[in-house]
Length: 381
Image (cartoon, rainbow, N blue to C red; front, top):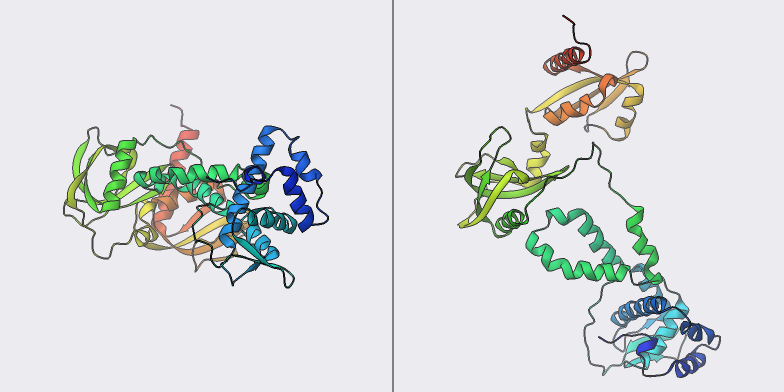
């Protein structure tokens, strides 16, 4: 690999300074001289910065007769996450023109730069800071959803992204972005169960190749594992748990299997079958991961004014309405799916919510409140 930096040039620092003095009369020799007095790690970071930047520059310089100015190059580099001045770009161009067949059109200002029309075309593999940041964020948040085989294939790219973002001060601002964004769970955080790598790899492989999967699975209410031929349809991560969505045998009813309860998995040399018109996104939208799906209901609630405020900004449904009720309380109406998740959400509000309708849901909460009364205030014998 050629390092496109001052250190890689066949010229000495002194001759390099003379060339820059000719190109930029106000160039300060101390910029280069001071470089020799820096600690080794700072010099290495500076060289890494320069290499990445100059690689990106070479990719953006067009073939003659097309051309690009130093200002345009600077703007392109800044959009890719490099922190660089126009003066630095001008210096880079002069340095690179001593190594590569680059030419500048000095007949008019600003000067336009291009590859010589006879220059041999070649491709420069590189990764911009912006691309590196995107890869890092994808790795942080999507690693559990990427096929294991593809994740290992992408490992060199993730390593390259780490290197780009750690290359030096020239990419410091964009590299620090990861420290400025976060995803906070809306419910109590739970520790994810263990997922054996061999099972993950088998599940991913079957999904990727549309093949059947033989799984040995222990249901929550069963003590022994049962073996089934499954037709994988998708993977869904819900909180700390990842689920395999699949059908069994030749049945068309779609089921969910917690991945950590799969004790063994083997890809079969048989094509998997997908129920007609099945779409994972639609399956989720219909409320499958609320678990108990009983259709849509007209929900009427009485919230304390404080508890209802956030629902003005993040409504339960498109037809939601909120109106004033008795003093200190608001009345909310919305059409929602009748699910277990709805009940968990309502219970989290404790005494700040009252279920008014539908009647059967209200009766459930009356029963829960009586049970809680018995737990916290047991009747003594």
